[in-house]
Every structure is written in structure tokens, then in C-alpha cells.
Image (cartoon, rainbow, N blue to C red; front, side, top):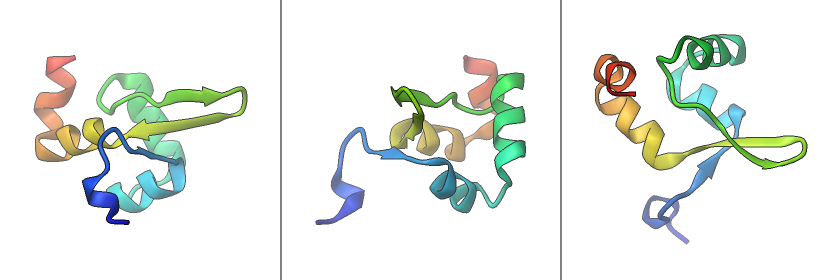
Length: 68
């Protein structure tokens, strides 16, 4: 299975940290500041980020925060 072909894929914090090259505390601080996509609650103890939102953020991080 090619993960790049999945629509609406979700990524956990570990993958998000690898993708952004940032730490978990930085990611959550950015979410609080509104400059990074918020996670989606998948279950009582589970959150993940939508692949589409991460790609939109990566394309233009400064515009993402302004557009939200």
C-alpha cells in the first residue's frame, strides 16, 4: 500500500515531529498559538493530524496561520 495515495490519512505526534523536525512541545505550542494545524481527537486518549492539513501548512506556514 502506498501511503501517499491515501486520502485523509492521519499521522500521530511522532510522525508530525519527524515531518516538521520539531519537538512535541513545540508542535503543541504552535497549535496553541494558532500557527500550526490542530490535531483531531480519534478516541479518548488518541489524537492525530490530517495529512492534508500538514501538507497545506508545509506549503506555506506563514499563510496557513493567517488563513485560519
